[in-house]
Image (tube, rainbow, N blue to C red; front, side):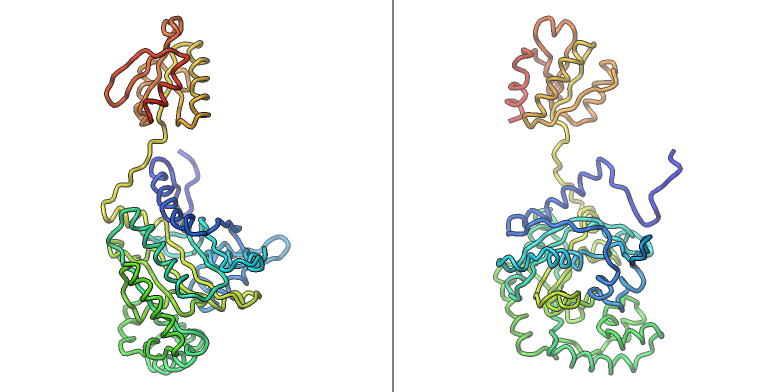
Amino acid sequence: MSTFKAPKGTYDLTPPDSAKYLAVREAISAPLKNSGYGYIETPGFEDVALFSRGVGESTDIVSKEMYTLTTKGGSELALRPEGTASVLRAALEANLHKLGNLPVKLWYSGSYYRYERPQKGRYRHFSQVGAEAIGAEDPALDAELIILADQAYRTLGLREFRILLNSLGDKECRPVYRDALQGFLRELDLDEETRRRIEINPLRVLDDKRPEVQKQLTGAPVLRDYLCDACKAYHEEVRDLLNAAGVVYEDDERLVRGLDYYTRTTFEFVHDGLGSQSAVGGGGRYDGLSEMIGGPALPSVGWALGVDRTVLALEAEGIELELPSTTSVFAVPLGEEARRVLFGVVTQLRREGVAADFAFGGRGLKGAMKSANRSGARFTIVAGERDLAEGNVQLKDMESGEQTAVPLAEVTEAVRTRLA
């Protein structure tokens, strides 16, 4: 038993469960790869100011949950709590927006870190797949991203998720709503910290999940009633495009999500089978974020879907993913000469794209066959001194139990034919 354990609120991914997480990542990213999104990878830590400016000083993410550190040189860094700010920073630094092909469409996958109270579905280290479309203000982009996420979840077999949709307005109409909301909130019985939040970013109070706060929000002004004509028209086009694509969504006038940079379209994917941690992903438009972090005006939209939460959603619906076997052929040598020969066979099979493994450690036939069974291999190649003297190996079908002698020189082709 090791002296060390994974830190509180984190987890290890180990076989065979890790295969589910890989399959989920692949399913989420597959529609993106088919839609012009290129892969991007950013560092696990960034300048603290990137998140405090972009995500927002008043958010729980920045004020309570961000892991920060000071380097030996005195720089203030933070483990990334979300992906959008990092991806936009990287795109600006690489001048991707100047290559003449807007929007810049990017997808990413990685680990993120937030200091939270650990519970099922909420970890201090978690995994996401995300997508960003940078540099274009177009309702079709917003709709595209929602459609691609919906497609990914349906490909996995999920059916019991819901898409919540709202508009947060823009710099023209949101200030008017902000004033009205502040006036309403100032009359409520709220704690001092929440009262401070009213003055900094009152929309964040709407995102407060505490029942005692939510109860008082009944009758609060809703942003929909304050949207300017341009924002109304934009939102209606997003809705029309989703309707035309057959994507079912619910209008949620209270949806604001937990980040300060969202404008206009905002959405969330929720799964009611996950209890209180029902959100499995979400996103929205962030037209001013580039300017917040020192870049030019680049209207953008994106989302991030939680891999951990998606796996929990699959389990809640009782969905078992059809995962390919990690091994198709398992070689069992009996004797030193057979070890040398079959190791060469396994190497050749791998070079030809066949997933093959080998009975390492010099175990006897019984122990080696147990390993072959546990590997999930469809075929086992067994060879001893007599087989090799005759120029053969034994090829055993692990499903039917049928075993046949195959010439050593033809075993690779025989395996490939049977697996085809």
